[in-house]
Length: 291
Length: 281
Image (cartoon, rainbow over all chains, first blue to last red; front, side):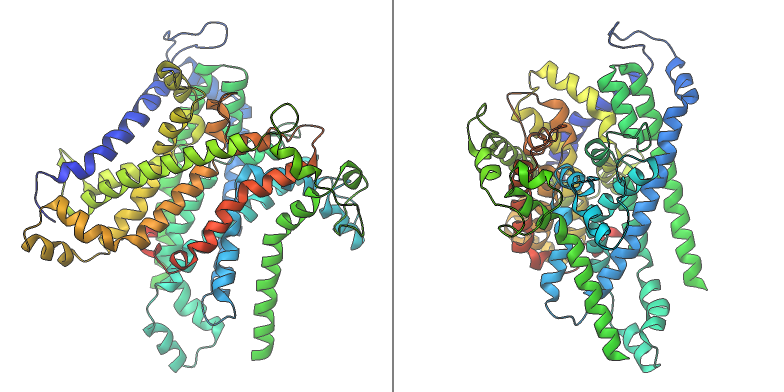
């Protein structure tokens, strides 16, 4: 650590810039959440916690939160397993490994909404290639986007396609940074690939796994764009996530005050839940390490 | 046993590659279809299964009104993404260097807390900021302008730049700075002359992440611009109506995602070197 008055020249431009852009919107949202601002009477009156009482009783909001929790944890776990498997596949001696490493990253380089538009044509019930392909295998056409459960699955497929690469990137970076010695020791002990994975690779990757899972959970908890393009939250509200429901209330119905209080509730819950998950993950992985 | 293992390994690699590429191939073949090629059901091979046409591609380069003008959104996306990424990278790198080399104390707030403050901005769901951003840009007269979007994107991208660069600087030995300072360089000179030239891998990764999240953002572009300024994702999604012209939709999607895919292959050697390993812990 160095000492110099000039240190502020480094930190302050970025810090003040971020504060200037973020602080007003955040404080404003909190203030608006205590007002009845809507399309009829726009303005900052004070109605206390009325909006929050309404959020508390709003079943649609909590269903959207539950759905979000399910979809976020579901897709992130699938991404973790697939991403870890892919990272292991191209970690060591594989032909053209540099090519495959980049190829596996390609989906995360592409614009989620734009690829969702393409996915929507792929899922098309009568004209899409997916049902055409399933037909060749002798299956009946699947109504991918028009039945609740299938629509959730479709959104999750697209999310997995889009973001497994990110998990892959983080986990591959982790694998490449591991020391050699434990693997040599395992080889000397005559451990096969499966044993080496569970006794050496996986424990060594624990801290990186935790980091990668949390980074992806943070990003996944904002799921909304794929939903907007693929299903618009439907059929009914079958694929509506928290962000999307707030979007409808706030920017379609212009219930600004109410949407703000949902936003604040959502943000607080996110922070609390993610902190708990981070603590739990650390604990689980470290217990495994000890065993 | 070893042969079987090898076979399964390559089979898995190829299977996932096929899953990754499939949407692009589908978009590519669809982009050469006409409406008769689309409504007859899924077809894949041009000439054999449908009569290819350049209509889907041609329509993208006509003036608005006679077709879909994709050139203007392209330039807007390019301007906004590059500017916001450049600003974020400069501010983020400076802040990260400061946080890595000097100790800051403001009451109970220390370096780690400031770093966390930067990074924690990623937790913020975009929807929470949507309405205030709208009102803020309205008050500044920046709604529907590239400058307004650049401002918003800096807030989005700065945390990413700080996240990657703090870790990067932490891995550069402090002795490097000390040597420069013994030679009589001040902190700014040290940073500029000694540290920055050694930062290329970090800057490439941080810059790439900024560009990915800038170029690919849809939500803020969607709510903060209307007619004067239009970014690519918004322009493409606008084609996604009930009677979608799948051919021009596919063509526009492919040109929209192409630059970053190409970029990924160009900076490939920086990506898979384990540069990010420390940042995750």
